[in-house]
Length: 213
Image (cartoon, rainbow, N blue to C red; front, side, top):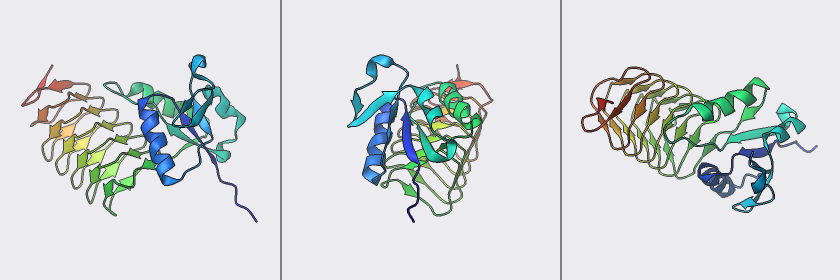
């Protein structure tokens, strides 16, 4: 008896989606198509995968028959990515995790639903990642770090041991966070910053050492 495999649909046709499609193709995962609200892109392709319709196409599938991939990236604000995820979760749909085979991940890492881990990322023992997080290219999460949901650790960012990051925060490209610090919810750590003190929620910090903006 054949086993039904859920179709994979990628939400979004931008640069972040392109990276995810590349990983899925590397893993040999069949992709049904890309969904994109801009109608002028319908009929085009991303790395050979057709852009077939807008997000409403999802409703033509039962939740058990499809897996979604959140292809919406974030540069500063993680809220649009969170809202897209929560919209479809509220309708009962599931999100696939996408993990590059060249990421280095301890067997003692715990990841939530829909996590995305790019090439060269490293996560050591005791790390916990909430749902819908992005661990981008070359990012490092040392032992016992904890990330809430919808966090983006940008390319080359580094978290030392036992750092806690509140949900919806963005740690910018090349930023460093020293050990045992806490970043509150919806924080923005600017690219290249060195964080030496804990950061209150909804705070933007930048510089070396990082200071509130």
